[in-house]
Length: 285
Image (cartoon, rainbow, N blue to C red):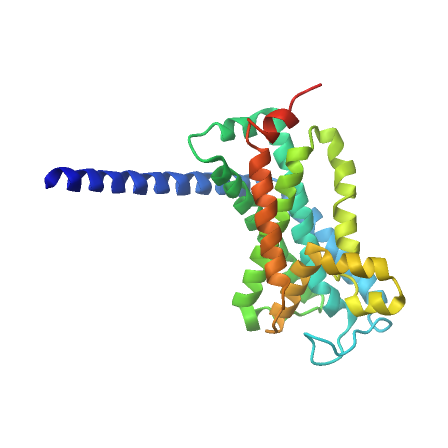
């Protein structure tokens, strides 16, 4: 009777050891990204300058011109800066997610990513660790933006519904990070990064509800922009955060965000398999 018991115990210890090893690997990758970010003091500043310019200049000019009607999730008329604040948080998450794509391409060029992918861990777990690091950095930058925005007079009810807001922000950061991860599979060289990003960042941002509500698009007759914005995953990431701030039901937005996250991460994991996409896409001509 002792033989099977010892074997079962040993197998259980091996599984626990494997889990502990995987968690230590994730911690190391996340910690590495945080240390690298802490040494790049200008990175936080550059991440905040863009949305703060929109908030302090663009929103200020339209504060009393472009009022937002009483529509969900708002219970009263609101100034424009309050409306676009969740969209600007989304901008922070979007740009950091795309910047993580650049970092992945750089790591692959320098050989570090190839080294990580040869570690004795499942490849999806390594990619998940990179994605977690991206999300942590995105959330830190978004939190810094919310604080500075509050100092400028744009206060958001973050603390009133903090768990729901955090859940929406975390899932949005993971989705946009997974999109960046997917794009890094198809970007062969750093020289191609800027052009590719221009076809991703700006359409995703401007064809969404980050700057204007859907009903405004429909009312203005821009039907094709309205339809694109309806199906844009970034729209649903912003709307989930917007509704979470006021404790309202976000509808199908969480499902679209989570579905996009799963699909992007699954395809990226497939692409980073040396026997499939990654090995072929990184070949030099």
